[in-house]
Amino acid sequence: MSRVHDALRRAEQSGAITPPAPRSNGDAHVASSPSYDAGPNLAGLLEQVQEVPFRTATDSLLIDVSRPHEAPMEEFRTLRTRLNHMKSLQPIHSVVVTSPSPAEGKSLSATNLALAQAHLAGNTTLLADFDVRRPIVHTLFGVDRSPGITDYLLGKVPLHQAMRKIAGTNLYIMPAGEAVINPLELLNLREVKLLLDRLPTLFNWIILDSPPLLFAADASLLSTLCHGTLLIVRIGHTTIDSVTRAMQSLCNNNVVGIVVNGARRGELYSKYTYYHSYYTPKEKDLDEEKSGDEAEGEEVAETATGEQA
Image (cartoon, rainbow, N blue to C red):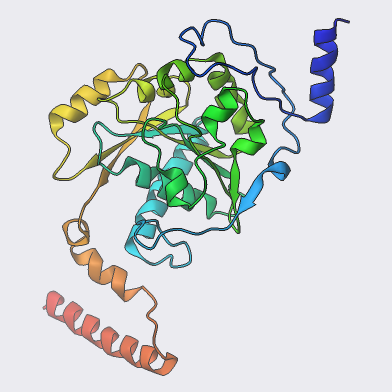
């Protein structure tokens, strides 16, 4: 057996994942001659990932899984439920989250969806920041940008060093890594496809944050490598023309849904706002809460009687 076959067999038996061969950051022909060890056995990789504390800025707008009754958490749990239902009907493991234009909330939506998915027991989730041009995931979680995805693809670090595990959760993140001058060429590497093909053996969900569709071709390329695309739009910001052009720019027709961002609670819920507040636990003394529930129940009964009359 050749030395190459011996090396592949040893890698499979040990479970070690080696990074791609080192590359020059400015090589214009970086996608022409990839060298990559497929490393089919990923056993033991997650145990090597560094664990970091879960710390976010107070103004980060991330959902708080410890307060599940808040409206934002409820909305992302609804989105999670729909995606998990779709997954039960067809093989969906990786989703690209993008938007037509900047400032439409795609990164926050991707992060909050990943947090909601990771809140389920045993639902191991990876949030990968493929928006190499303007990354934000590392800022939201208070970690270093590098090492990350680009460092791994450039052959500078092994795969486990490009990841972080958020302590106390099922969430893993891959920061963008060091800045590169040729992000689209880097994403065209064969290593990217092999990486995205292998990750479902480790994670139930892989969620990719990517640049806006109308400002870079990165998201369109990534959509061809993933099982689905989630389009984020913002009320009062995104136009119908932008959505149309964004959909037309996608190479694959694999859009699994459109998420409307920036809506006010009153615009969506109307009477459900009362329903939601009625079933949301309040931070009161038990006696006061009981008394309040009884009074609220009498009011509901009176309202129902009036409607029947």
